[in-house]
Length: 343
Image 1 (spheres, rainbow, N blue to C red):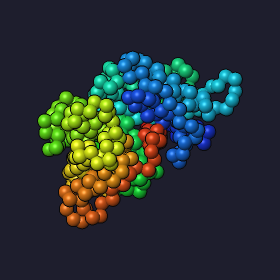
Image 2: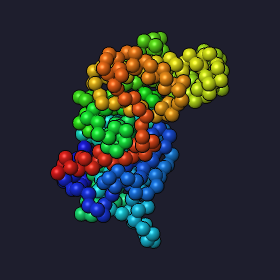
Image 3: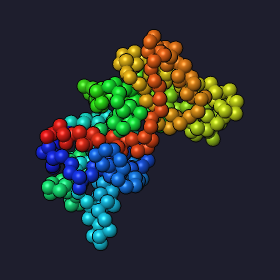
Image 4: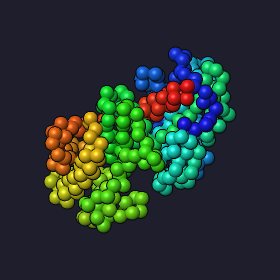
């Protein structure tokens, strides 16, 4: 956790809440979360100023945190934010969780790489008067958004009780996270679980969003499924994986082939990681996880075909349980855990 005001081992009191934040490329969502993982009020959302620069991003994140805290402070005229024990943020990019900074990121958020998220948000919260009951500024903990999602699922979702779980997020990209002994495993370079950039045979000749060829994300992510369909058919009006799925359901042979290839490539990658980790279960999240059997059947078939016994028959492959609230809950939980570690 970054060295920000309030890092003194303070533990949340019953009068304080946590605030979890999910920073995405198109929207930023946040909510108050209690010590049991329940949302204490509605999820509030604002558009992400993704191309306005890091300062605008930090202003927006901090402003939303203050608004969420104020929403739980009653209906006084001043609408001062209520006490917050800590703030947890799940953000796109590779995150140094010790410093709370962005190690690297794509151009989905302009200038995001190198941003001191923890320090920048804490400074703005101090300026806005957000405090804990002891009068100090709430500490800010930052992690990758998929890691935050995994932390939520591992705590009270589909991974609850698992000693080891692999969480795979498939939507606009392909991400992943590893849960060991109930905690997110970050790795030496904060890259543990980044499955989207695994080598993939079905992606040979395809260029990944990171700029390198032959990575899983180039064939398995939603926008790439749509891109591959447009390139195969010339149908420029097909712009989403769900549109390809509808065509596949209607019997379109190219759509069926590309949808199956995406699921097969993902299944092969999952099997490779499972062979190394031997997790209790695999949890699938993201937009593609809401697909039907056209995607889930080849995914499950591939995973089981690639694995040896007894893993092939015993490994649960399940959808995530918490939905879009998972990264908010997980980020808040990780912030609370950081308080305990500091103490």
